[in-house]
Length: 219
Image (cartoon, rainbow, N blue to C red):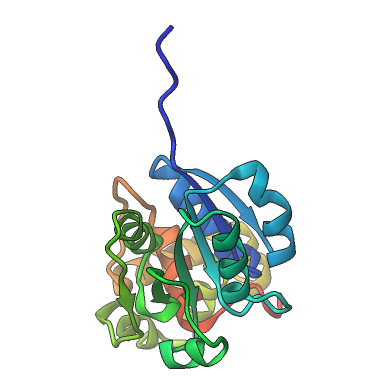
């Protein structure tokens, strides 16, 4: 038997369950050994066992330590760890939360990316010692999302929350066929299609979540 291929290890820290799952799954599909945590405390308890090559963390984790503090602690323990901050905060707001940022870290605004694959691409740059700064920007995909009708936007929210067509039909009190047609129109309006790296539902969920936040709120 040959030697097992070495897999890069990433620790994903995000307090929103859906975003955490999407990001971790994206890294897993790209060949990373992905471990996720919902808080800095959980991440710190697992870090020694995981020994990550890369930390991808939100800055605001809902409680202390926050992502900046987490990255600082982990860097003190293991200076080799590459760091990418993922947040809804602007760079200025992020910097205001700490006296200094982590050297060589990258910053990606959640609203500045359209797919989770873009996050993985940004992480690849971090690992190659090419830190990136991706601020929020007006994108064609986001404009398309904001151009949906109220009914289409609600369908999109429910899709992003992980509901099946049958579950959406029950909630909206319409037929499954009606939902299927609505979903097709949403995919068409947003310009998403199946590809090698992602599916339309994942693309829609990522776009909705990065634009409006957790879609499961209120379910």
